[in-house]
View 1 (cartoon, rainbow, N blue to C red):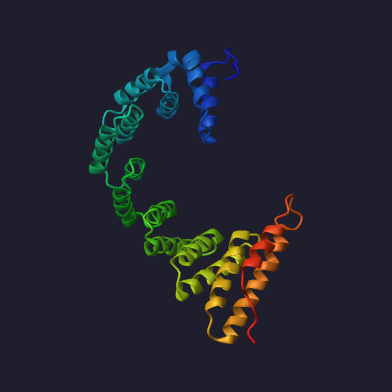
View 2 (view 1 turned 135 degrees about the vertical axis):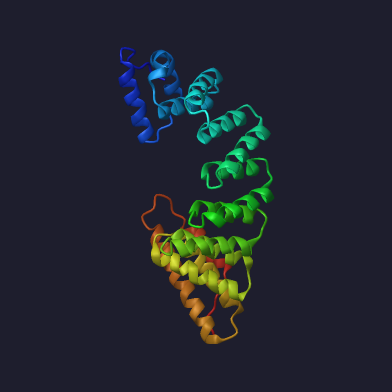
Length: 286
């Protein structure tokens, strides 16, 4: 880092740290340097939030001596704290002892089954190990208690997609749509899953949700392409002339809006779009 003013008092440095916490700026290297140069002698006067901030920065920089000194102070002040136990689990992870980290996290959950941070960390560890089946199991248990956690449903959807369990991934997106029906990205992703599943019924659902995504955000080009592709697919399989005409009209509408979205763009993808259109075999019913 660029050298900071070493004449700053420890209270001024403490205030700088507080601002970084409030603004959620990590600045790990800066924190460690300022700790070593200014704050370390005043460790006994620092609050637990600042010590935890330094601890996390030390783990980032693999400065285990700094991390251990902060953890010792926190452990002495809060000997029964589950939060300190979670910090200890993080230290085990950094040192590569994942089993010990899991033991600490499971201890936390035995004491407090609603501890969200510990449960999420366990899920993340199973995922990082490649044990996605266990991660899915843990995440399902978690969502039974925290059904409104949208990040949790998104993560579960991702895990199901890794296993190509499209019906279950679609269910996750339905839960997200119940919570945020006006989120165009949720409609788009749900539509993509139903499109991948295939079949007339799923393709109709895909078309409807691609259309909704495009309605909520007219600049969502990916949703417009989805409308185009799903309408084209349905037109190819339509047996009723009136329905085929409807799908062709929708595909034409989508292609028109896609080209409008690209007007004025720095690069010109019109040729690529025209090539894609050329591969389609849409024709009006006789």
